[in-house]
Image (cartoon, rainbow, N blue to C red; front, side):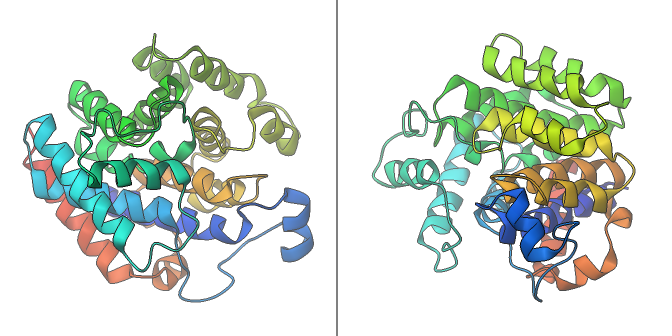
Length: 309
């Protein structure tokens, strides 16, 4: 079962990211003009490329596998090494975020991870990549919070970005737990309590608009996803509107104003963790880039999780 959930998580986030890649930076109105009245519904080409969101999620997954069940400093040293590999990679050409690049550059220059992040940045770059943390530490919420926070502040120092990183990882944990869906919002708010009022406020808006008949109005109510709290809220909305349907979840995320790839990536991680790999259309699994590697990564991540604790 854990292998199936691990594959659901990894493929879930990568495919969501790839579906949102062509629609990032453009409005929903323009998406409909370019892809049809229902927006993007499939990969425009094969293989489908994912973005820095998945690349950095992969980096964290590889770091957790390498570090094993060690102390925070050892884990963060592994994350640092993987992030530096990502920054130097010739494939790091898919609109990486400025705060991510700056934080990793600072670490590469020798700045400790606890001080390397851009102090006032609350972009979604730290929240988009934490799904493997939520998976590995599903049964150790204290360590989940510790590692999610540390992995975030090395690039994004704002308290709201910290809350978004912890919240995104915790939502994956709750999805794996199979929690009653109506409890996801209050449980996440409780877990991140006291960190950021902005995060609490935007997450509360998900409850306000879940029953609205016009989904596009609900999306506007939640924001565009460029900042951490909005990206997590939008992703959670996409999942809670379609909890039994992975495809609808990620397509809703990809068909949004703003940071569509990050929204669909986070939403895909939650849905993939909740439903498992069986819920993801096989055609998307077949046509995502590096599918063989992604499957191997998921299996190795499942082994690492089994050795934790």
